[in-house]
Image (cartoon, rainbow, N blue to C red):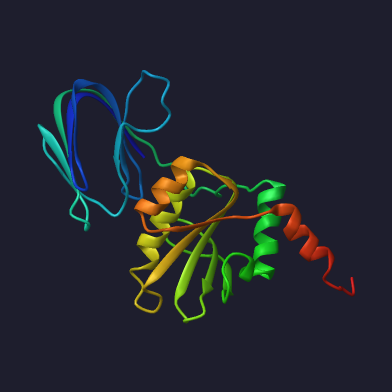
Length: 220
């Protein structure tokens, strides 16, 4: 991971146009190619602007130009670099799900039609270069469906599923892959973003799912 503190301005061109005037900011470049620009005010934990991988970065002393296959461009114009360092953080073990979220995934893997009629499980924790997708399924027409499961669904979960879909749709054996975001409760903002990204979303009743489990006869 590379951390740069610089006095800079930022211009984005893509699905919309946006800009940030010159100010001191933190620029983070992750090993997977993600670039994010942060401020130190307003109490915000999310970046002011960012570009998700895969990206192409062209860097000069005066500016960085980040572009991706979707035709988006982010230009960081550097007035002054105040700090520039890199760290190798190594492999991350990934997010450890809490009990409810992990149990939701198990129950839905056993009952994928609770998410969508005709859905069948291909694999839990399907691997990608940026982490495992909770469930990879096939719908009634045989098309691949990537499913991300959260206890409470926010914008971050939709962004996470968006990144997974980007990687999965590069595989000719899988594409086209669509996504479904699943949670006990999904925020209005997450629903709006999911619609914009053409991602489906489903709210699941955990207690009802547990009732399904209790009705299944088991030897042990």
